[in-house]
Length: 470
Image 1 (cartoon, rainbow, N blue to C red):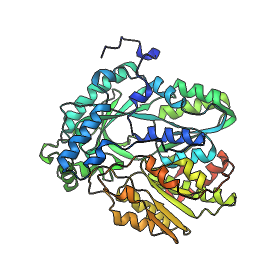
Image 2 (tube, helix red, strand yellow; image 1 turned 60 degrees about the horizontal axis):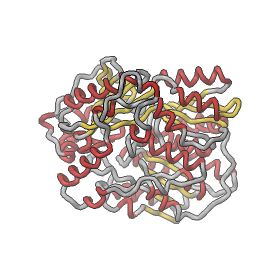
Image 3 (spheres, one colour; image 1 turned 180 degrees about the vertical axis):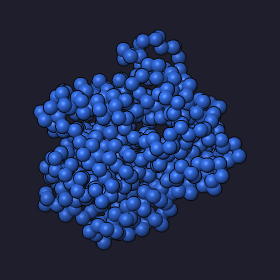
Image 4 (spheres, rainbow, N blue to C red; image 1 turned 30 degrees about the vertical axis):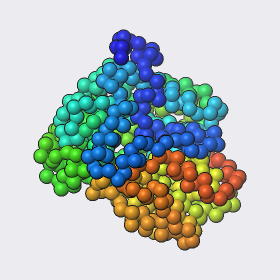
């Protein structure tokens, strides 16, 4: 591939956004789902079945090799990382939304309940970061120091043309499995409001519309030398704790065996900051930029600090229930989504209450069980467990997912297709659409929520769970 001449990337000569942003990354799926919902469309075209589905019953080494080959076909090459243009990515994101005026916008960390909130408000959702994956040809899942060295070199290429980014490298065999040894994961966080976002807000927001920024407040130890690139060993979404990534950890040994590694080679880099926000945190400069833009243009800004994903999931589910009942609907049918198995438009079309589990870890499933135990009973509960594609000691078993479905008084449904081959089989996003299309229609859709009403409800209902709204 030809080299990019110095200076061209900043002028928009970089790669197209749909090539840069990692396929299947949470933020990418959430933008696509929100844009479709605002057009009155579902997610039936998102995520086709992959060739890996035929390897479900294959031995672990065969599945790992197939996954690595598939990831390698779509990961960026080292030369391509120099062509990344973050502004072009931002333009690609905003261009997915219908061209009309909106009464507000939701920005920030990738959380499906933030997307459900945006759809109820009738507004777009804009991520504060995007994920990239790049080749690590001679990588090894059990050598984090080598991962850091390789990632730092790739990050330098990206940052040369995008100084407004902070790149958080995440090396997590517990959430990425064998892919952590064949590709590098870089979360690109904007340190200022992208120009494309500012233009979008100026063109599309109604007068006095509000900005709502959702911030993942979880922390994790990182190595950061202050060069725009930081390294994170493990992640909150793994269902494990930072101590579990210590060389003496039994959980780490199990994870590395499953991913094809050896715990004897595990040498973690030095930690420079123990309390930094994890990969899905929002850069302070992004929030400051949004607030400054809002003040100059007459738009207020609210922040929602989320201590754990379960807190926002529960608060938005409660908000949906009240919203539906106010419109004369029962609000008694629940769908428990997981990971990329979601469809905001089908949820609204069927008059369902959505609760989102970040992933299939026991921690996530414990959260929905506790919320259900303290909630008014639902007449039906549909559960869509996303298979992580690998085994981990932190994963919830199918009996725990079945226990969630058992909260339904009349209907208790665990999707069999999603459960088949769990936890190693992959299921595309469109599977959620297929399931929810079978739910009876409950139209018309309720009138959109108001931003002020939503903020007040999140402040009141979320406070007991640690949700902080300002």
